[in-house]
Image (cartoon, rainbow, N blue to C red; front, side):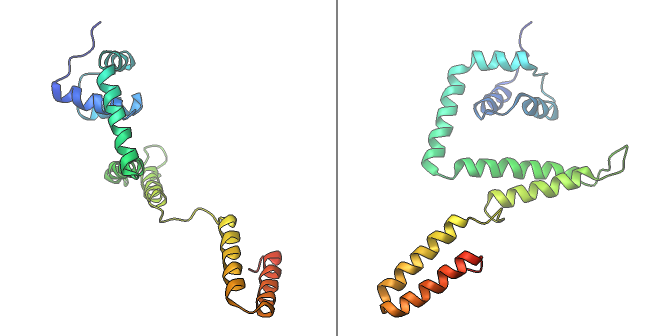
Length: 167
């Protein structure tokens, strides 16, 4: 059986999705949302094989652009999360039929949290190595700028605090 016939615009969009390495289930969801012809796994494989050179070229172009821009991959992840948050926002107050729970609202809030984390607006933990490096840099500055006896007192106090977790 032949693959479904897509319009030129649909094919361009599908090739873009394939080059971005979106999953089959996600592509099929988008296809259903747009009321395109059915795109099963065999159809996606057909397009991956038939348009392999174009997909590889687009994929290479995306990666080159990502390397050149530095933040492109992060920007793309944030863009995907933002799109997902928008989709969830549209249905966030729809209650589960069986339990009445607002699962979509919870998922929407979690997605917004993921966006904030991706953008660096949420701290996920404390990096002890950074504290140790900062402490060493401070001691180096003090050693270079203070009399030896004053430096020794401050260094001793800092090191004593490091041992107790107070520093």
